[in-house]
Length: 249
Image (cartoon, rainbow, N blue to C red; front, side, top):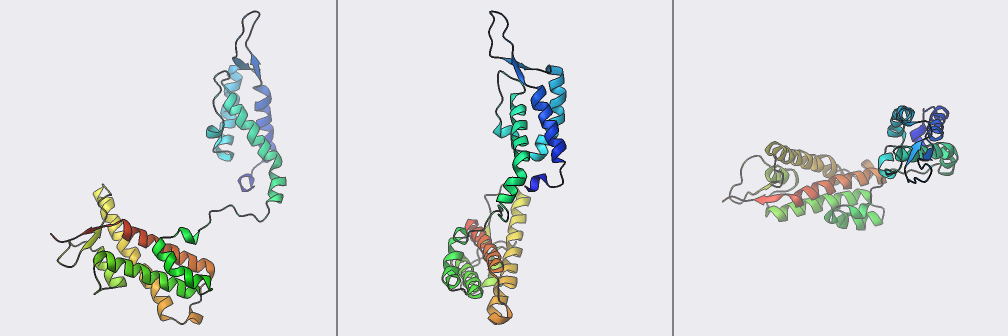
């Protein structure tokens, strides 16, 4: 597993094993006195010392250890000891499991049907027939139509429309703006507006225009390239959808 690449797994395993062995819990019951509480065999002072040695190991190689190993009310070092046992088991099996999972990519996947509905509904028909170039073009046109409908502007399109929509200037008659009033911080709100403007303009300049103006053979797209372009258009569509219309009084 990648988490163990470059790590002295034998040394780490030995350190964890030492902790597990020395902190073996022993019950504190004596004579007729019975308690569920336990103490580490090595003594509390030594256990604290050992704990400070293994914590950095757990934090680095098993960052979820605090969430996955609950505190034991009866044994102070129970959670750390359980985490050490889990990590040592992972180390012992990582080579075998790694071989069994060879080639498996656990990275997140981009699902096209989870893109903005306007984007994927426009692109899906062309995509299903293998026309990725046309699918991206259809999605860009859909975002443009969505923007025109929201702003009530059929006189402008694409780059000019986005520039008008997110302009820093106030709205005028027949020229509404798109704003993000749900963002409370003023600077962040202004930054978001300018960012949406720049991003939208670049989407039409660098995504829509090439697929619209160049022949397919001069701008053929791989599946990954097309998905990335659809994802960018999907993000722009979501921002346009989330923005609120600000009209002139």
